[in-house]
Image (cartoon, rainbow, N blue to C red; front, side, top):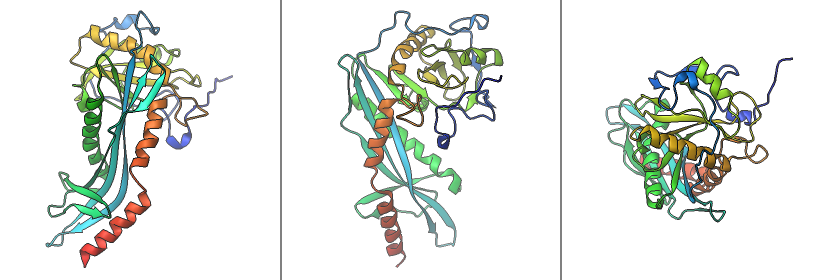
Length: 320
């Protein structure tokens, strides 16, 4: 009988990987990947957690959320129209004191608002007590590309709040790829949805054979935001080939020895935060502290319906 597994992710969120079948990510990456640095390709095999690694006393997890509040249009004097996106975003940090078993939201979570548009004449929009600051986007400002423009200021906010919260010898876990945050010390990028196939079919077999808590050898990616990376399987997955698989990154500026040290550290630390299916529709990849932080940050964004109405009234008043 063919083996069958039920993915623990709620199907309304898609899947933990983006592919057209059950064999994992279907889109091959164009990044140049070097897989021989920790061990030769012929010796690739699952690596057990531990090997002398000890969890840090303090782990900081940073995340950001964003929301599209309204789509606006501006009409220039020459009759040209430009789309604009009024968006809200927020970032915060959860401090997990593993030595004492305490987790708390670090003071200083921040909210930002922006009106993203290519319009040369657009000005800040005051919607009730909330101001949306104009952020010019390049090009024609196509509607479909405006949401992506929110990522840069959100990343800046995440860097600001995480830098303010850093402590000596802590470990910072960023929800998502590191991208422009690679300069931060002792920092891991945590990628919970797998969209690209980076490894050969033979080495991908090592990924799908991982047991909970095991990781792959470290490999190096030569893309624009390249760095050291490895796969890790979290506990609580259904047993499907890619269930519970996450990819973790660290800076390319580190030596292979430093990257391996962080990889071992991640294998004994990150699984402690894995969520359970009965609590989270994206278990086990959506880490418990991150899920709680997301809920708090979304609450800080305010009521979307109230803001949409305030934006509508503000736009109407401007046309008079």
